[in-house]
Length: 253
Ligand SMILES: NC(=O)c1ccc[n+]([C@@H]2O[C@H](COP(=O)([O-])OP(=O)(O)OC[C@H]3O[C@@H](n4cnc5c(N)ncnc54)[C@H](OP(=O)(O)O)[C@@H]3O)[C@@H](O)[C@H]2O)c1
Image (cartoon, rainbow, N blue to C red):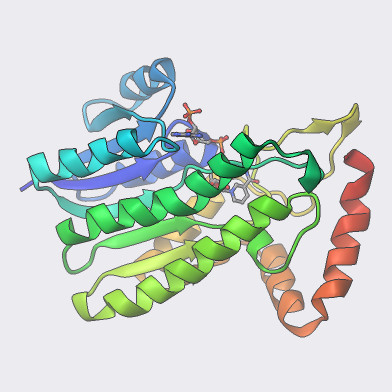
């Protein structure tokens, strides 16, 4: 039986860092999921035969179902499921279109939940689920309100799932990074260069996430800066942190 990893958002910054680490694991295939076919082809050329590209829009239920069908057809041993694809926009919440609202909730919440549901029956003792949440899940964050709220969902869901799956020897880790240097971050807003405090590399986040997942932790927090943010969110009134965040970011909106 093939041992596989399923990775969404495989062509992005964090996705490619995951591929590099997964290639060191005892698995036969990485099911690499994203929409852009050219970028998927590039992945295959760059990382070789173990990459099994799946072109799929994770906001479309009919396309996500293809993953369930592939699992049913191949009956693999899913050693890693990494729900990494996500969508973010920094803007006033009232400026979001209905389509943007639906898609953000879809890809950040519903899709990872569905893929967990499809993949768990094909997991065995030692299998690991990593759901990429965010440090923005630690408290409400004005101007990325929708994103931050979806990541609260994913963190909460993942930690409960970790608890429920313990008997099977499967762990689910909510990965909660701060700013990471990837394409997702628009480095400029309204002509102003955005300052991202505590920004780290994808490689650093991924190494820590896999290490924590292997230990069975329900959360992975990378870097001292984000650990400090996490502690502050627990001991300080959240309104204070919201004000600091809101005042810092307002100038870019
Ligand atoms: N960057 C940060 O500062 C940061 C901080 C905390 C958490 N995160 C989280 O980390 C995760 C990865 O982000 P990243 O920074 O690596 O982003 P990225 O470089 O922009 O990559 C996003 C990936 O998701 C795929 N994707 C986007 N929409 C999709 C859709 N509808 N269907 C299928 N695939 C889709 C993209 O490929 P296609 O466009 O080809 O589909 C790409 O592979 C996200 O969940 C994000 O919320 C990021």
